[in-house]
Amino acid sequence: MGYYSSVYLGWSIGTGDPVFLTHNSALLIAGAMYVALIGGVFALAYLAHWMAITFGSKPTFTQTLELAAYTATPVFMSALAAFWPVLWFVVCIGIIALAYSVYLLYTGVPILMHIPQERGFIYASSVVTCGLILLVIILAVTAMLWTSGIVSPMFT
Image 1: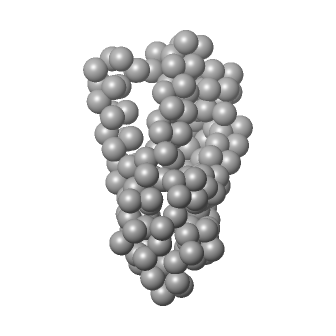
Image 2: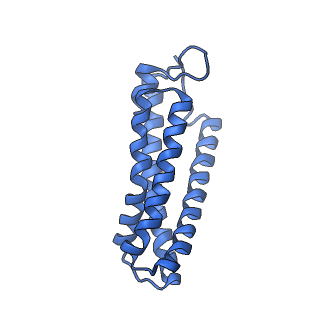
């Protein structure tokens, strides 16, 4: 969605003219973001699997991958907001999707991980913290790639 909106619709930031990216630049950035998000889900699943043992659960990696994918789905679906590429709208939809993802995590942990409800809250809070750290890592790597010129946007 980000590719389509940045190449064909243009992003509106404030009251200025829409900003467009070149086809190749948008394709490279969209591909890199897709790989980063899928890698983030697998990393979160690994961390959730590693932490589950501390909380008295012995899940398989598949169960923790299901939990990570299940909770990340609203954030992935929020990409549909890019059909109306106005910054404030996309950010609002992203915040709503993130809040729903956290809700799904807190309700899904006792079911998918077979952790008692009282311990599930602490476990889910730990998973949220790991998810936020992974997000910061993805943003830091993105900033490094943009400033180095490897994956920098090319405007039309």
